[in-house]
Image (cartoon, rainbow, N blue to C red; front, side, top):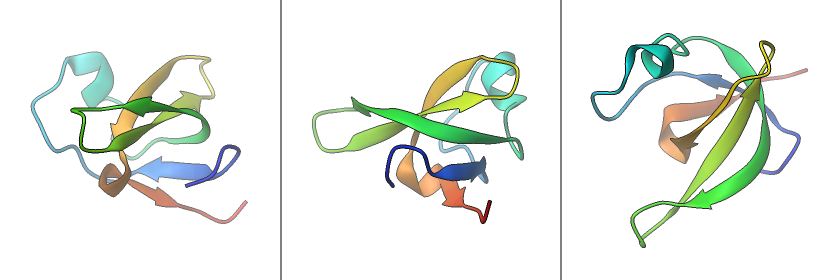
Amino acid sequence: MEIGTKVQVCRLRDRVAKDIADKLGKTGVVEGYKMTDGNGVGAVVKFDDQSSSWFFEDELRAIDN
């Protein structure tokens, strides 16, 4: 996933806080990357409400603009 890609949160791997769980199904834009557990890279997604969080790539799907 490249910075600027519009994505939708399509699944969550783990149990997460309610504010993150509420992002399921929401769309946002990839604004950066984050090292996860040393084995991979997550994508930092910024949402319309100006909040942002990181997700594993398999939790996101790219959507057409």
